Amino acid sequence: MDGAEDFDSIRSTVESFLLGGQREFTRQDVAEQAGVTSENSRRLWGALGFPANSDGAAEFTESDIAVVRYFRDLSVLNESGPQAVALAAAARTLGQTMARLAEWQADLVALEIISRAGDEIGSPDRVREAAESTVTAFEELQRYVWRRHLAAALSRTFDGMTGEDHTRPLAVGFADMVGYTRLTRHLHPSELTMLLEAFESTTAAAITENGGWVVKHVGDEVMFAAESARDAGRIAVEIQESTMMVGGTPELRVAFAYGPVLQRFGDLYGSVVNAASRLTGVARPGTVLIDDAAADELAGDPEFTLRGLRSVRVRGFDRLRPHVLEPRTLPRDL
Image (tube, rainbow, N blue to C red):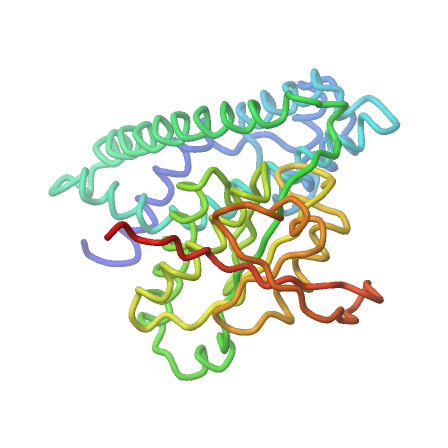
């Protein structure tokens, strides 16, 4: 490739394919053809996480008009009250999730397009073919993974569902790396990448293989959930044990709490979540702490031993009683 001009040509060709055509419509054009007001189209555009450009600029394509119609039919643009708020929040959550996924994929997709175009990288037609085959492959992968995750999420959600925002009893936990801030000051970016990959892959395996699911990763911390305190106990113990086997990984603090949790757009909220977070903050490195409700659920469970500690006073809780959870050592057959 000769330089910046070649990449500009590739960018223009790929953008035209991804956007479904050339940018030729203003915001007012989109609103008129989609049958909504310009203000409503602006609100939707912002909720999806796109920059609000001048109303007079030709920034939009046929695909933009189509998506406004989809949301219009979902009532996000023409209803008031709680439903409109919920659907606007759905648009915002969708935009944030897809933005993060796109940022992660951008380099990988670009390299794949260049690889598939090969020696004909200078040909717009060949670049478009390479972009189409690459994006189609990623779309199919995402469609498959999304459907599988949606099936699992729906099976957890339908039982006892009372509305879009609803509570249900869950075990919610956190695991975070000890000394992460200090480590980041001394690690090379490649070393930090390897550390985070080891942490995320190890914790994700422990969570999913024991019946839980990852709510989110945020830097040095993972948030997880499980249907039962027993599953959460297995997850917490395995996270600690598996991390100790990965060389160079810092010690972890792990904790979880059990009780009614509000589920909203894939995230979890409520005092149970706050209790789990506070317990994680006071846990000693290499240990697992749980709250009273989780301890009650696990009392007498042959897999674990529990040891109560003195109550602690943390932000939001005057008295929060931790319990140390450890795996029970079973006698071996001689």
